Amino acid sequence: MSLLESISSPADLRRLSRTELPQLASELREFVLQSVSKTGGHLSSNLGTVELTIALHYVYDTPHDRIVWDVGHQTYPHKILTGRRERMGTLRQLGGISGFPRRVESEYDTFGTAHSSTSISAALGMAVAAKLKGEDRRAVAVIGDGAMSGGMSFEALNNAGLGHADMLVILNDNDMSISPPVGALNKYLARLMSGKFYAAAREGAKSVLKNTPLYELARRFEEHTKGLVVPSTIFEELGLTYVGPIDGHDLDALIPTLQNLRGKLGPQFLHVVTKKGYGYKLAEADPVNYHGPGKFDPAVGLVKPATPPKLTFTQVFGQWLCDQAEVDSRLVGITPAMREGSGLVEFEQRFPKRYHDVGIAEQHAVTFAAGLACEGLKPVVAIYSTFLQRGYDQLIHDVAIQNLPVVFALDRAGIVGADGATHCGAFDIAYIRCVPNLSLLAPADENECRQALSTAFAQNHPVAVRYPRGAGVGVAVQPTLETLPWGQGQLRRESTLARGAGRRIAILAFGPLLYPALQAAAKLDATVANMRFVKPLDDALVLKLAREHDALVTVEEGAIMGGAGSAVLECLARAGIAMPLLQLGLPDEFIDHGDPAKLLGLLGLDAAGIEQSIQRRFGAKLAVVRPAANL
Image 1 (cartoon, one colour):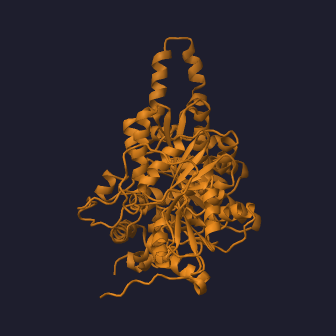
Image 2: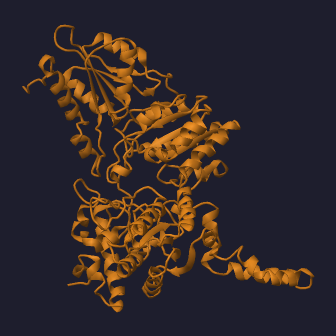
Image 3: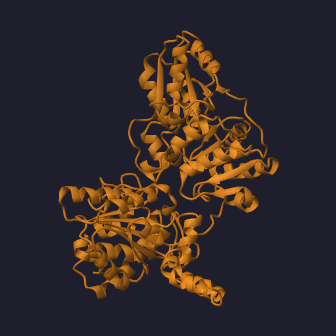
C-alpha cells in the first residue's frame, strides 16, 4: 500500500513522520496529474499547492482549525487528503464532487469559494467568532497573488490588522492567477522575490550620497528609509506580522514555519513562493493552457484535435472585437483578469495600447470603463455573467445613472457545466432588465452574436450582450459589422393550425434555446419567435402573437423569476391582455455542476423537455403533428 492510500483523513497524515512527507508529496502530485487527465479540471494550480496542503493539514488540527482556500481551484490535494480520494473520478461531473470547496460536501471545506478575494474576510470572521465564543482554534486564509489584486482582500487585511484576531494569511505567490498577473501589486511582489531590491537600493544611495552632507543624514535615517522598500512594509503597516518569503515546495521550511506561526497571537502574514504546474514539466512551461485542461494523456500532454472544433461564442466575440477596433479607434477592450477565458488574446496582441487587464477587480473594471466613456471613448468590458454580479453597484451608479455608452460582453451566460452554481449565469437577465437606461440582447447563434455586439456598440447608452459558454449550433459567421434592427424580434416559424382546430401556441425564445424550441415547435405545429432583445422588448411582436394565438410560451436560459418571461407578462399586463402563458427557464434553485446538455435535459430545456412541458400545460386542446409512417 502506498502512503497516499493509507490516508483517509488528515489525522492519518499527522501520524506520519516528517521524513515520510516528501514521498507522500510525490505520490499526491502524481495522483492529481493522473486524476485530472481522466476527468479534466484545474491542473497547474493544484500541482503547485501539494506541499503547502500537506504542511497545513500536518500542522493544523483540521477540521477544528479552519482553512479557507481563496477561489478554491487549487484544492484537489486538499480534497484527496480529506477523504475524497476515491471520488476524484467523479470530479465536476453530474452527481460527483465539486471542483471547488463546498460546505455541504465535507466538514473540511469550511467555506465555499469559487470567486476570488473572499478568503481573508471569511477567515477573519471565523477567527473573531472563535474569540467571541471562547474557543481555542485557528483560522487560515490561503490566497493567491492574483486574488490579492481584488480590493476586497485589502479591505479584509485592513480590518484584520485592527481587529487583533488570531489568524494567518498565507500569500501563495506563484506569479500567476489564470492569465498572467498585472498591476502594481504584482510588480511589488515580484520585486521581493529575489531579496536583492533593498540591497541594491541601499548601495545605490550610498554611492550617490557618500561625499555629500546628506550622507550622514541618510545613514541616521536608514532604518526609516528601509521601511520604504523591504517586503514587510505594506502588510506590517496594515497591522499584520510579516514572515517570508519562503519556498512553498520545501516541507522542511514550511512545517517549522507554520508550527511557529500557529502558536502566535494576532494577525500573521506568511509569504510563500510556489510554482504553478510544479512537478509536471509541460504544465510548468505552459501554466495558462494547463490551468483548466480537458482530458489528456499525461505522457503526451495537450494536443490539438484532428478536426477543428466548432467556433465558440467567446471566439466570435474575440474576432468581432478586433474587427470593430480596426474601424473605430475609440474602442477600448477591458477584462478583469480573464484574457484567455474572455477571448482577448488576439486583441491584446494587435491593439496593446487599447487593451486593459485590470486584474481581479470587477468593480474597478466597470467604473474604469465609465471614466473612459465620459471622455468620448467606447469601452467594451468582456466579463463573465457571474463576475459582473461583483460590480453591480458600479453598473448602476457609475454607468447606468450617467447613461454612458459602455458595452458589456457577458460570457458564460446560462448553464456553464463543470464549474457549477458559482459560475452559472442564471441571474443576469433579471438583474440587468430592472436597471433604467441599460439594454440587454440575447442572440440565438454565432452569427447573430456578432450582429448583436455590433448593434450594442452602435448605441449611445449602456448595452449588455449575453451569450453562453462553448459553441453554438454551427451557424456560419459573416465577417461584417452588420447590426440588427433595434428592439425588433424575428418570426422564425408560423403555425399552420387554423383557429378552432386546436390551441394555437406561440413560443417566444430568448437566446440559443431558439433551436430546441424550433424542434419542439415542429412537432406541435407552434409558432416560434426569436426575440433577440430582452430589453427593449419587442412589445409589438409580443402583442401580435398574443392576438393571433391562444397561449404563449417563453423559453430562456436564465432565472424564471424576473427574467425574460416576466418581461412578456408585464407587456401583456400593460396592454390589459389576460391569457395563458407558460414560462420555461431556470428554476428558483442553484444549478449544480455537470454536463451542460444533460443539465438542460434535466431542467426540461432541451427540445424534448420543451415539448413535454407544453403538452403537460396545454395538451388537452393541443394539435400535435405526428411524423408520417415509413412506407
